[in-house]
Length: 284
Image 1 (spheres, rainbow, N blue to C red):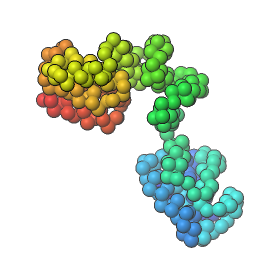
Image 2: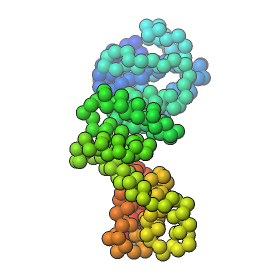
Image 3: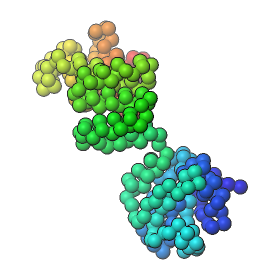
Image 4: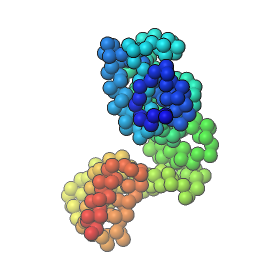
């Protein structure tokens, strides 16, 4: 009977059933290791810990070469640790020598995430350094590969807004069906950017709010500017303050602005979850 455990031992006897056949359901990482080789023992501990977080989407097969070297010889393993990736009954990749935790995690992500999730992870890394051109290049390639994937077009519009190319972002969004779930984020970000264009800068608005905290118009304007600058937590605090002080101001603009910021942050964002709870506490 084939194992369902995420981590299992591999031998020449069970290789066909436990690795080749199982790989038709989920990717299997074969780790060649030995307790006598400390870097490979460390790789085993790291991968065992990481694989547990992937909810059965990938399996880790452990080949202890101190017990049997047949598989290592067959798969031309030259040193330890060494990884072979098996998918759909075929060798699909390898990784030789000690690696960083992030390298192992990247490999697991590539094997388990959807194309959209992989792209989003790449974009987060690139955009953290403000490299909009590389981000746009990644998105354009993704759209070329999957022209009917509307989520990629939404990502493109979002990056264009962050880069300041609002007209290009409008054109991209115009071609995305309005009922597309991922459309909310770039649409909300674009609306904030358009609204911010007619406002004073953050420094001037901050001074105005500091001089008169009851000036809710200035508090709201500063909120919009902070969102545009991607300073989300202080923006959320100000929107909450408007909600707390006056629900009638601009027809409950404090609550509505909180919801718009949640859209910008995206589904599942921890910051959005925290402030959504606080918003409900103020309201009830």
